[in-house]
Image (cartoon, rainbow, N blue to C red; front, side, top):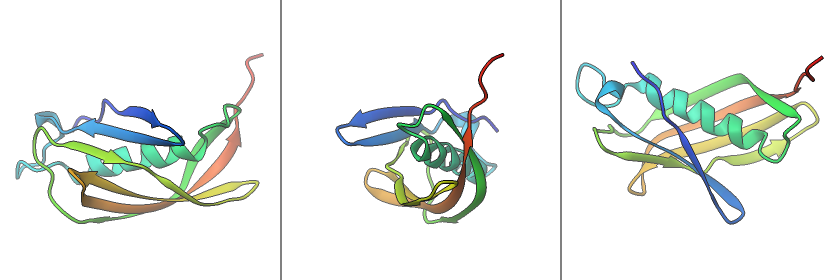
Length: 120
């Protein structure tokens, strides 16, 4: 199974994350592989958790998801992750992945905020 490429676009105060399903993302039934959707969701919530904090790197502590609908070749999958709470150490996130405004996956995660290492 292939993942990506993933994209991000700023739309004012929020950022939209997206990717397009290709044949390499498909499972044996021809729909998107669940792992491809979960990988994209994890990428999006991690990227959003540290957006505006270039000194931080995200680490997924927990991730849960529910599959809501099948996705087929050519579909553009989009999400605008939401920060529920930010502490000194963690960011609590949720997101809904959509195709043409219809939800296909709902997820939530806890992201650890790590300081990026400086090159010596």
